[in-house]
Image (cartoon, rainbow, N blue to C red; front, side, top):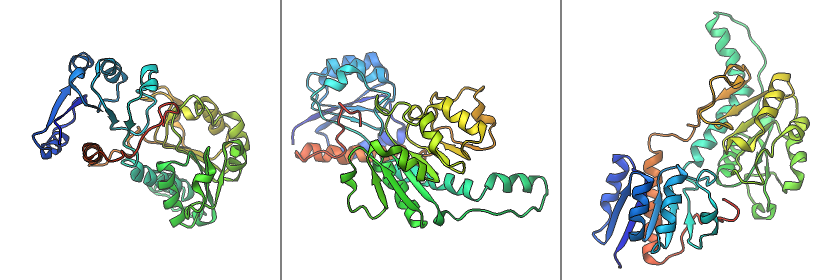
Length: 322
């Protein structure tokens, strides 16, 4: 087994560094706590492990990484680290797809139940000392439409189907979901308005690319049911935020459950903070106690495959950005 040098761009926490101790003496670990240091160390690296979500780390290191044979990112989405040289690199790039999907699927289910059971109203009545029964909804009689049916979308579908919901999915290649037991119908992108119009809950789980930027906008809100709820666990800019705010303020749709927003942190003057029909999470729906440890464990599994010459999993199509 050949010696291998791994350059970690950005410093992991101590728990994640401890996980690296299991590696044998043929693996050399370098850590760049800044982009300049990363550029200096990059010529020694066989593997670039992008831990930091700041683009500058990889942007500085990649041109200098003449020996590198593989790049791995601890994140699922690539929009925040993408730049022209990365898009053009012949190096294989893998991501952490799957690490965060389960907790994001749980957030989607939580947001669905939050609006179906009107939990906000329950809390208001409880705090006011008011006993005021009201009708709630059974989600088993409702439908969930998932925009972007990748790993996160499938995690949402599994949970929705387990609750008896009708599940619809939207993806560029519908044939890839033939026979999927968690989906009742799959739509191509050209039929997105049809799917959205049928959905009681519209879940955005698409990556951010030039094609998906603001893909849910006025036209999409116009066809939604007035009782519809939009939920976003993908990337904030996939939804045209001003259009969504207009739809929420006017009552065009019932509500929104958001783990991501167009600008993060969400500015203090955003109307989303004060809307009664918005459930807002500060992009932490996947921040479980072990989320970073799990990301490191996935890298170690990939590293084992890399060292054995086995095909890497979670390969990203850099031209598409996911």
